Length: 268
Image (cartoon, rainbow, N blue to C red; front, side, top):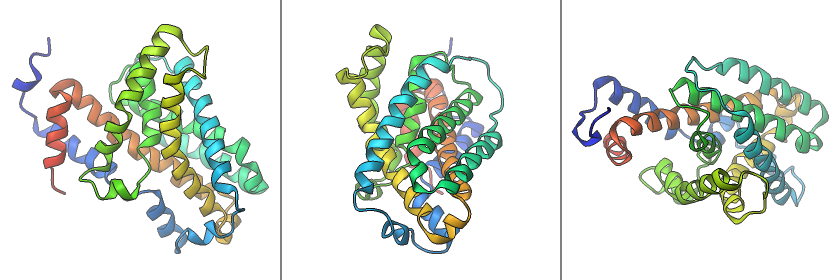
Protein backbone atom coordinates (compact mmCIF):
# COMPACT_ATOMS: atom_id res chain seq x y z
CA UNK A 1 0.00 0.00 0.00
CA UNK A 2 1.16 3.50 -0.78
CA UNK A 3 0.04 4.80 2.61
CA UNK A 4 -1.39 8.21 3.42
CA UNK A 5 -0.09 10.75 0.83
CA UNK A 6 -0.22 13.49 3.48
CA UNK A 7 2.31 11.57 5.58
CA UNK A 8 4.88 11.21 2.79
CA UNK A 9 7.60 13.82 2.43
CA UNK A 10 8.65 14.88 -1.06
CA UNK A 11 11.94 13.28 -2.02
CA UNK A 12 14.70 15.39 -3.54
CA UNK A 13 14.29 13.57 -6.86
CA UNK A 14 10.55 14.19 -6.93
CA UNK A 15 10.99 17.88 -6.18
CA UNK A 16 13.56 18.04 -8.97
CA UNK A 17 11.07 16.38 -11.34
CA UNK A 18 8.37 18.83 -10.27
CA UNK A 19 10.70 21.73 -10.98
CA UNK A 20 11.35 20.32 -14.45
CA UNK A 21 7.59 20.01 -15.00
CA UNK A 22 6.98 23.58 -13.86
CA UNK A 23 9.66 24.90 -16.20
CA UNK A 24 8.09 23.11 -19.16
CA UNK A 25 4.50 24.06 -18.35
CA UNK A 26 5.18 27.72 -17.61
CA UNK A 27 7.54 28.18 -20.56
CA UNK A 28 6.55 30.91 -23.05
CA UNK A 29 3.92 29.72 -25.52
CA UNK A 30 4.20 28.72 -29.14
CA UNK A 31 3.92 32.32 -30.33
CA UNK A 32 7.20 33.27 -28.66
CA UNK A 33 8.96 30.19 -29.99
CA UNK A 34 7.81 30.75 -33.57
CA UNK A 35 8.57 34.47 -33.48
CA UNK A 36 12.06 33.69 -32.21
CA UNK A 37 12.55 31.17 -35.01
CA UNK A 38 11.40 33.34 -37.92
CA UNK A 39 12.90 36.50 -36.48
CA UNK A 40 9.69 38.49 -36.67
CA UNK A 41 6.24 38.60 -35.00
CA UNK A 42 3.78 36.15 -36.53
CA UNK A 43 1.24 38.97 -36.86
CA UNK A 44 2.76 39.36 -40.32
CA UNK A 45 1.28 35.98 -41.12
CA UNK A 46 -2.14 36.83 -39.68
CA UNK A 47 -2.37 39.77 -42.10
CA UNK A 48 -1.92 37.43 -45.06
CA UNK A 49 -4.77 35.07 -44.17
CA UNK A 50 -8.32 35.24 -45.60
CA UNK A 51 -10.95 37.10 -43.61
CA UNK A 52 -12.81 33.97 -42.50
CA UNK A 53 -9.68 32.00 -41.57
CA UNK A 54 -10.29 32.15 -37.80
CA UNK A 55 -13.72 30.51 -38.05
CA UNK A 56 -12.37 27.94 -40.49
CA UNK A 57 -9.46 27.04 -38.21
CA UNK A 58 -11.85 26.63 -35.29
CA UNK A 59 -14.07 24.29 -37.29
CA UNK A 60 -11.10 22.22 -38.47
CA UNK A 61 -9.62 22.03 -34.97
CA UNK A 62 -12.97 20.86 -33.58
CA UNK A 63 -13.29 18.19 -36.27
CA UNK A 64 -9.70 17.05 -35.71
CA UNK A 65 -10.35 16.71 -31.97
CA UNK A 66 -13.47 14.61 -32.52
CA UNK A 67 -11.31 12.24 -34.54
CA UNK A 68 -8.62 12.54 -31.90
CA UNK A 69 -11.04 11.55 -29.14
CA UNK A 70 -12.03 8.44 -31.08
CA UNK A 71 -8.38 7.72 -31.90
CA UNK A 72 -7.34 7.98 -28.24
CA UNK A 73 -10.18 5.94 -26.79
CA UNK A 74 -10.01 3.14 -29.34
CA UNK A 75 -6.27 2.79 -29.96
CA UNK A 76 -4.41 3.75 -26.76
CA UNK A 77 -4.16 0.62 -24.67
CA UNK A 78 -0.69 -0.59 -23.79
CA UNK A 79 0.24 -0.43 -20.13
CA UNK A 80 3.99 -1.09 -20.35
CA UNK A 81 6.54 1.55 -19.37
CA UNK A 82 9.37 2.47 -21.73
CA UNK A 83 11.18 5.54 -22.99
CA UNK A 84 9.19 7.76 -25.35
CA UNK A 85 10.22 8.13 -28.98
CA UNK A 86 10.06 11.92 -29.14
CA UNK A 87 12.35 12.32 -32.14
CA UNK A 88 10.49 9.74 -34.22
CA UNK A 89 7.26 11.68 -33.80
CA UNK A 90 9.04 14.95 -34.57
CA UNK A 91 10.38 13.50 -37.81
CA UNK A 92 6.94 12.21 -38.81
CA UNK A 93 5.15 15.49 -38.10
CA UNK A 94 7.90 17.44 -39.89
CA UNK A 95 7.31 15.25 -42.91
CA UNK A 96 3.59 16.00 -42.85
CA UNK A 97 4.40 19.70 -42.62
CA UNK A 98 6.72 19.53 -45.61
CA UNK A 99 4.05 17.74 -47.65
CA UNK A 100 1.43 20.28 -46.58
CA UNK A 101 3.76 23.17 -47.35
CA UNK A 102 4.09 22.00 -50.93
CA UNK A 103 0.34 22.53 -51.35
CA UNK A 104 -0.09 25.59 -49.13
CA UNK A 105 -2.85 26.51 -46.67
CA UNK A 106 -5.36 24.59 -48.80
CA UNK A 107 -3.84 21.40 -47.35
CA UNK A 108 -4.95 22.28 -43.79
CA UNK A 109 -8.17 20.13 -43.80
CA UNK A 110 -6.02 17.07 -44.55
CA UNK A 111 -2.80 17.98 -42.77
CA UNK A 112 -4.31 19.11 -39.43
CA UNK A 113 -6.00 15.77 -38.58
CA UNK A 114 -2.78 13.94 -39.47
CA UNK A 115 -0.55 16.19 -37.37
CA UNK A 116 -3.08 16.11 -34.49
CA UNK A 117 -3.07 12.29 -34.53
CA UNK A 118 0.74 12.26 -34.54
CA UNK A 119 0.85 14.71 -31.63
CA UNK A 120 -1.64 12.63 -29.66
CA UNK A 121 0.38 9.49 -30.33
CA UNK A 122 3.50 11.26 -29.04
CA UNK A 123 1.62 12.55 -25.98
CA UNK A 124 0.46 9.01 -25.21
CA UNK A 125 4.01 7.74 -25.63
CA UNK A 126 5.22 10.31 -23.10
CA UNK A 127 2.40 9.43 -20.68
CA UNK A 128 3.41 5.78 -20.84
CA UNK A 129 7.08 6.65 -20.28
CA UNK A 130 6.04 8.45 -17.07
CA UNK A 131 4.41 5.27 -15.77
CA UNK A 132 0.78 5.90 -16.71
CA UNK A 133 -1.45 3.06 -17.85
CA UNK A 134 -2.87 3.88 -21.30
CA UNK A 135 -5.56 1.25 -20.92
CA UNK A 136 -7.25 3.56 -18.37
CA UNK A 137 -9.88 5.92 -19.79
CA UNK A 138 -8.83 8.79 -17.53
CA UNK A 139 -5.27 8.61 -18.91
CA UNK A 140 -6.56 8.59 -22.49
CA UNK A 141 -8.60 11.73 -21.83
CA UNK A 142 -5.61 13.31 -20.08
CA UNK A 143 -3.74 12.94 -23.38
CA UNK A 144 -6.35 15.09 -25.10
CA UNK A 145 -6.26 17.46 -22.12
CA UNK A 146 -2.65 18.29 -23.04
CA UNK A 147 -3.89 19.91 -26.27
CA UNK A 148 -5.65 22.53 -24.13
CA UNK A 149 -2.54 23.26 -22.07
CA UNK A 150 -0.54 24.71 -24.93
CA UNK A 151 -2.52 27.93 -25.21
CA UNK A 152 -1.58 31.09 -23.35
CA UNK A 153 -4.43 33.55 -22.96
CA UNK A 154 -4.33 37.05 -21.51
CA UNK A 155 -6.41 36.07 -18.49
CA UNK A 156 -4.11 33.09 -17.93
CA UNK A 157 -0.96 35.19 -18.09
CA UNK A 158 -2.29 37.34 -15.26
CA UNK A 159 -2.78 34.28 -13.09
CA UNK A 160 -0.14 32.71 -10.89
CA UNK A 161 -0.10 29.59 -13.06
CA UNK A 162 -1.73 29.16 -16.46
CA UNK A 163 -1.37 25.40 -16.03
CA UNK A 164 -3.60 25.17 -12.97
CA UNK A 165 -6.11 27.59 -14.50
CA UNK A 166 -6.48 25.22 -17.46
CA UNK A 167 -6.61 22.12 -15.24
CA UNK A 168 -9.37 23.68 -13.14
CA UNK A 169 -11.38 24.71 -16.18
CA UNK A 170 -11.20 21.22 -17.70
CA UNK A 171 -11.70 19.10 -14.55
CA UNK A 172 -15.49 18.83 -14.64
CA UNK A 173 -15.66 18.30 -18.40
CA UNK A 174 -13.03 15.54 -18.26
CA UNK A 175 -14.85 13.79 -15.40
CA UNK A 176 -18.24 13.96 -17.15
CA UNK A 177 -16.82 12.77 -20.47
CA UNK A 178 -15.04 9.85 -18.78
CA UNK A 179 -18.25 8.79 -16.98
CA UNK A 180 -20.27 8.98 -20.18
CA UNK A 181 -17.77 7.04 -22.31
CA UNK A 182 -17.37 4.38 -19.63
CA UNK A 183 -21.14 3.82 -19.61
CA UNK A 184 -22.14 4.35 -23.24
CA UNK A 185 -18.96 4.50 -25.31
CA UNK A 186 -18.48 6.82 -28.28
CA UNK A 187 -21.62 5.82 -30.15
CA UNK A 188 -23.21 9.26 -29.78
CA UNK A 189 -20.71 12.02 -30.50
CA UNK A 190 -23.44 14.63 -30.03
CA UNK A 191 -23.96 13.67 -26.38
CA UNK A 192 -23.71 16.78 -24.17
CA UNK A 193 -20.76 15.53 -22.02
CA UNK A 194 -18.68 14.79 -25.14
CA UNK A 195 -19.71 18.04 -26.84
CA UNK A 196 -18.65 20.07 -23.78
CA UNK A 197 -15.35 18.23 -23.45
CA UNK A 198 -14.37 18.58 -27.11
CA UNK A 199 -15.56 22.21 -27.25
CA UNK A 200 -13.42 23.19 -24.26
CA UNK A 201 -10.34 21.51 -25.70
CA UNK A 202 -11.02 22.97 -29.16
CA UNK A 203 -11.43 26.52 -27.86
CA UNK A 204 -7.84 26.47 -26.63
CA UNK A 205 -6.28 24.13 -29.19
CA UNK A 206 -7.60 26.26 -32.07
CA UNK A 207 -5.70 29.24 -30.64
CA UNK A 208 -2.42 27.35 -31.02
CA UNK A 209 -3.42 26.02 -34.45
CA UNK A 210 -4.17 29.59 -35.54
CA UNK A 211 -0.66 30.62 -34.52
CA UNK A 212 0.78 27.73 -36.52
CA UNK A 213 -1.30 28.60 -39.59
CA UNK A 214 -0.36 32.27 -39.37
CA UNK A 215 3.32 31.38 -39.09
CA UNK A 216 3.10 29.27 -42.23
CA UNK A 217 1.67 32.27 -44.06
CA UNK A 218 4.87 34.25 -43.42
CA UNK A 219 6.84 34.17 -46.73
CA UNK A 220 10.08 32.80 -45.27
CA UNK A 221 8.19 29.90 -43.70
CA UNK A 222 6.43 29.07 -46.93
CA UNK A 223 9.86 28.51 -48.44
CA UNK A 224 10.56 25.93 -45.74
CA UNK A 225 7.33 24.08 -46.67
CA UNK A 226 5.98 24.24 -43.14
CA UNK A 227 8.18 21.40 -41.88
CA UNK A 228 10.07 23.56 -39.38
CA UNK A 229 6.86 25.01 -37.97
CA UNK A 230 5.35 21.55 -37.56
CA UNK A 231 8.50 20.55 -35.69
CA UNK A 232 8.05 23.48 -33.29
CA UNK A 233 4.36 22.58 -32.98
CA UNK A 234 5.18 18.99 -32.00
CA UNK A 235 8.00 20.00 -29.64
CA UNK A 236 5.67 22.46 -27.91
CA UNK A 237 3.09 19.79 -27.09
CA UNK A 238 5.74 17.26 -26.13
CA UNK A 239 6.99 19.73 -23.54
CA UNK A 240 3.44 20.26 -22.27
CA UNK A 241 2.88 16.49 -22.15
CA UNK A 242 6.10 15.78 -20.26
CA UNK A 243 5.31 18.40 -17.64
CA UNK A 244 1.66 17.35 -17.33
CA UNK A 245 2.35 13.66 -16.85
CA UNK A 246 5.18 14.29 -14.39
CA UNK A 247 2.68 16.26 -12.32
CA UNK A 248 0.06 13.53 -12.60
CA UNK A 249 2.62 10.86 -11.68
CA UNK A 250 3.50 12.80 -8.54
CA UNK A 251 -0.19 13.35 -7.75
CA UNK A 252 -0.65 9.58 -7.50
CA UNK A 253 2.07 9.50 -4.83
CA UNK A 254 1.46 12.69 -2.85
CA UNK A 255 -2.09 13.71 -3.70
CA UNK A 256 -3.24 16.54 -6.03
CA UNK A 257 -3.48 19.24 -3.37
CA UNK A 258 0.06 18.76 -2.05
CA UNK A 259 1.55 18.62 -5.53
CA UNK A 260 -0.23 21.83 -6.55
CA UNK A 261 0.98 23.57 -3.40
CA UNK A 262 4.57 22.43 -3.94
CA UNK A 263 4.39 23.45 -7.61
CA UNK A 264 3.24 26.96 -6.73
CA UNK A 265 5.95 27.31 -4.07
CA UNK A 266 8.78 26.44 -6.43
CA UNK A 267 10.93 29.33 -7.56
CA UNK A 268 12.95 29.23 -10.77
